Length: 189
Length: 319
Image (cartoon, rainbow over the protein chains, first blue to last red):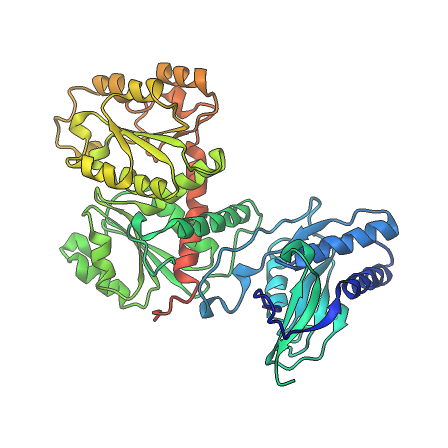
């Protein structure tokens, strides 16, 4: 998991405020449009849990900027993970492919934190069974480094150098209720 | 906490059932896709060991395993070494020695699956043991009822038929009670298991010999589940004639019409295979509100969910 589901301890440092998150997402939305030369054929797929509201927010910015509704879906990767044997099973979430599918589309995967890259590897495999997009790109709110696979993000809200003993906590209004921010806890600092 | 084996519906608490049903809902989505394949159980081996005939249970376990990339092998008693006189213990230990991960077992002896679970390291899934239990059937029935009715708390489910020989009924009363449903079971006195009173008190269900009274005079049913009259388990004398059974306990066209007058959406369930014209009339089996084919379709999704939770994760005590 890229980010921790447990609430951050009080000592956690805030590294992105709610305003920072909005500005970063706005810039990422513009970068997606720039690289894609407009909103044509774009499909946003959020990875549960926090990738889903982030994908919806990116879609809202795209709608505001370009006046079009970019299809948004959900891609659950639980059944594709390579660490299933290491922990008790949990119920997988639902995968929702937008009407129109993903064949020949430009799919932008959206997640909150990019860390080992294993979630994205699972997502790429899950996409394989849903169709054949023209291209798959990756947008993340935070890239904290420490990749274990040859995977990189195309769009990054914030590059956050961390030590692997630290934990990154993302809180969003939609998924966590209340205050929004990104915090770091633990480590030697 | 879902354990290593699924031997009885009583192994599952409410949270376990919710987890399995939620997983089954995701698996149902996979079932509607063009590519029905998940890599989740790649490299695992699931053996379906069936000492009794079965079409839907065995094929749905096989499909469930295959869609999750497990290697699934079917062994039926006919044509296996059991027909040469090998004991159950030797048969399962031979198979388990091939490093299989799960044994899905149907056997005509009640308690056979629990016994096997003590002989082997593999996960054991009860796919029906004698007149004892059939937990995955109860889960798929719960899934089907949930889909139609939503939360089952306080819902009135009527189960009718050959209770004495029915493992489907035994598992269903446990699972439905765990989910908070009100269950009434109906059977002629000769097909009512002995000692059902104490048991009804424990699991909180009601019993009756009068189908019409239950369907029309008491709290209206939210769902009706008809059970198969199991001719192969009977040594005669349970009821005088088939006709008399139908008149007293069959879901006839007339009974369905009276139910529809109150609730035209009422789900009609039957675990199959049906004796049309005996316990259920064709009009009821094929009625608009019949959930019988939904049950079959849910069977694969629910069994995928069970295989996933038993085999994919770490149970701590794993091999």
